[in-house]
Image (cartoon, rainbow, N blue to C red; front, side, top):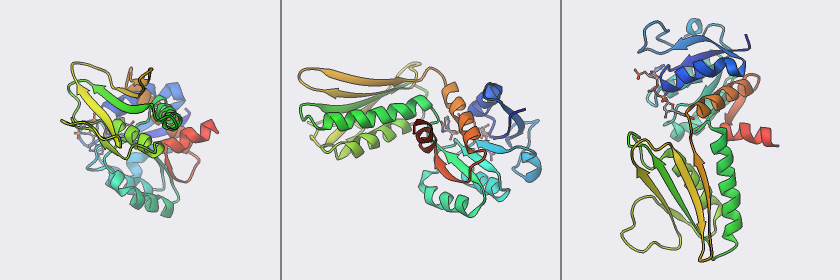
Length: 249
Ligand SMILES: NC(=O)c1ccc[n+]([C@@H]2O[C@H](COP(=O)([O-])OP(=O)(O)OC[C@H]3O[C@@H](n4cnc5c(N)ncnc54)[C@H](OP(=O)(O)O)[C@@H]3O)[C@@H](O)[C@H]2O)c1
């Protein structure tokens, strides 16, 4: 039967997790979603049942409450829902005071996590050569709700952390000459473009571009399932990046 899972939130991601679970030797034993008939409507010891790990892909407005409940039942948890990162310290304390393990991430794609590491290394290298300037570009379909993407914000933080020249990020049009200390990271929305993030390094002589393009949301679900297996026997508070680091070391 493999790892027994409880899915909290049965929307696009929840359904994808259920479809892919067996590929990762996991079995969904419980689904909790108040809006969907045939499933449990509330988190309780009874609705979690015999699940060993809960995976939350629900909604920013309820995720903190969900985390609190799951921890109170001393269950381990994967949190894929975004929009609560202002409360990271508070949740870390909650996890440390419980006997549980929790892993969270804004992007559970292993490819994007490694891409972010490549961007950090490339920024560090080009930073030593002032002929090169760094830029970012993200492109998505025209139905995407937010702009810039959360991933673009993360990538811009990586670039600023590894560059001695860039101090701030400009996501909007400048309508003027940009300052050398500004990183220009632009967004484009059109048609059905799959989530694409590019980071480039440009000089008079050449352009080097790193590019990540999502082919399917299944990459996010498979990362979350791997995170569930990783957190099963751990206690404490971890990011998805901690998990990837533990594999790379
Ligand atoms: N970390 C990552 O890699 C990653 C990847 C994709 C998405 N996300 C994030 O994960 C979240 C869900 O994404 P999605 O695309 O799956 O959204 P979605 O299709 O809207 O699914 C969310 C589901 O959770 C349900 N829900 C709402 N309140 C709930 C509660 N109290 N308990 C249990 N379920 C509840 C929703 O019901 P209603 O529709 O009726 O509200 C909906 O069925 C979002 O925050 C998104 O940004 C993260």
